Length: 180
Image (cartoon, rainbow, N blue to C red; front, side, top):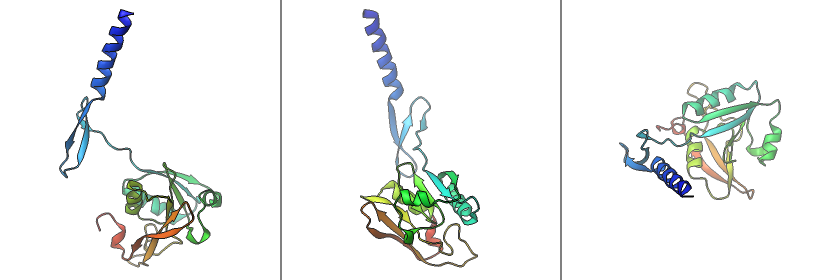
């Protein structure tokens, strides 16, 4: 019994030492947790979306490139019909587009939503939110680029209770990107 207690005590100390960490500030003043054993910042898990789309949709591929280039990891699921996905998430037909993305937390992102709005949403999901939607395929939205042509559009917040509100107005081509 005495050996068991000594072993347990030693293991506890080792585990506590391994789990202890410190936090420091980075160059922006943000608090960064440090892993003492590696003395490196502990990175938050990257955002990941599962994207349901048609295997032949070119604009979906361009949108996927956009979100990946902005730090969102993707898993692509090609389907001949993604209607069952839209039905499962109760996305009304007037808010649908060519692809549906789903976060690990179960929020949906319908259509050509700029990455920065997905990131903002996931950083602080509104109460009762089901997801965001950009209906149709607005010209100039990510994946729908046609030179410098741009059609202003709205990003809608769809809630679990069926209500809808405007999440963001995108009035210029430049507003869609993180550095705008």
